[in-house]
Image 1 (cartoon, rainbow, N blue to C red):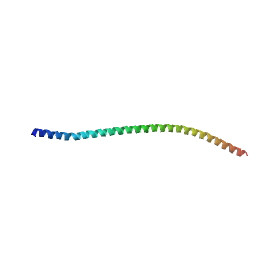
Image 2 (cartoon, helix red, strand yellow):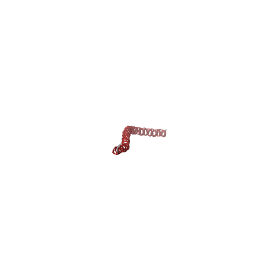
Image 3 (tube, one colour):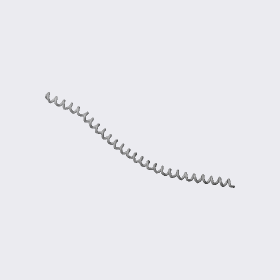
Image 4 (tube, rainbow, N blue to C red):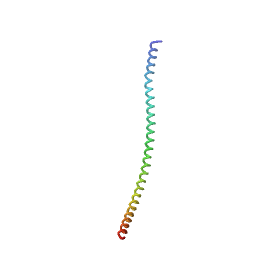
Length: 96
């Protein structure tokens, strides 16, 4: 084998060996980006589910507030009737 051919073969081998880490690095970078994209998509999906759940819960709480307000009004009416009744009962006892 001639000296020029030997140099060309050795240079070719070094060229291939130098390209292997770059190829491995490019592959790993691609895989990392793909995993990141998948995780980002999953995170977005879960955040949307959480947001929907919070909105649903908020609507239920708003409805509950309205019902508690109605119950509070009914309680006040009943309390007033009870006090009037007890007051009337006290008046009836004093007359006896």
